[in-house]
Amino acid sequence: MSAVDLELAEKVLATARAMNASGINRGSAGNVSARCADGFVITPTGMAYDACEAADMVRVGADGAASGRRKPSSEWRFHRDIYAARPEAGAVVHTHSPFATALACQQQGVPAFHYMVARFGGADLRCAAYATFGSQELSDAIVAALDGRSACLMAHHGMVVFGRDCDQALALAVELETLCEQYWRVLQLGAPKLLAADEMERVLAKFASYGQQD
Image (cartoon, rainbow, N blue to C red; front, side, top):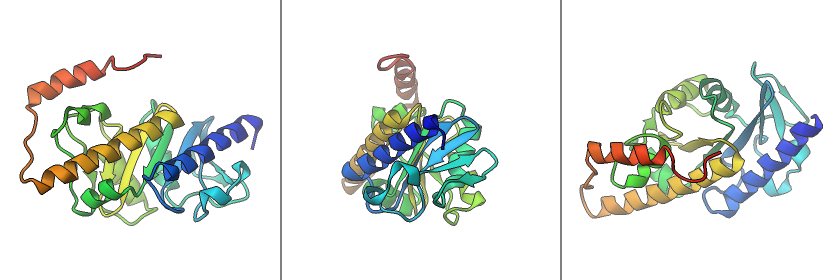
């Protein structure tokens, strides 16, 4: 790895550890990547993040060729394809967080039960169709579910979120898990009451200038 890639690898590893520390992921499940020149740096497959060093992170080119001392995450394909499809994506976080995964195992997305759903770019959050982990079919399903969104659920699997950098991607993943928990609790009370389409349009317009703009 170049010095630039090694610095990015340190950030990817720190984000993976923070992902587990936050409670939205456990063990070596889930993965994190960050875009670099002509590719991305991603967590390795099947390694506990606390046992990893920055040098264990893997550089993957846009052509899918990996370099480094470890094998890349088995999910590297959807990271590659998200970066190809979404130029605004600087980092990707994938977790098996409890509430997002529970909804995903019912093949449920998240409708406009709360205005914060719009934080992810639309009036709802989709659930990508199921496909075997690590497959091109899964990657294709995820990219389709992310159309116009920065996050989606993955049927019988988990969630995936992208952001402009590792910090934002992780923050959005935490927000998504919070929304999924809230929605799961709403479902215990009966059929959810949803916000009207015109209200979600107003919220989406407000989110266009939300927060500190770069």
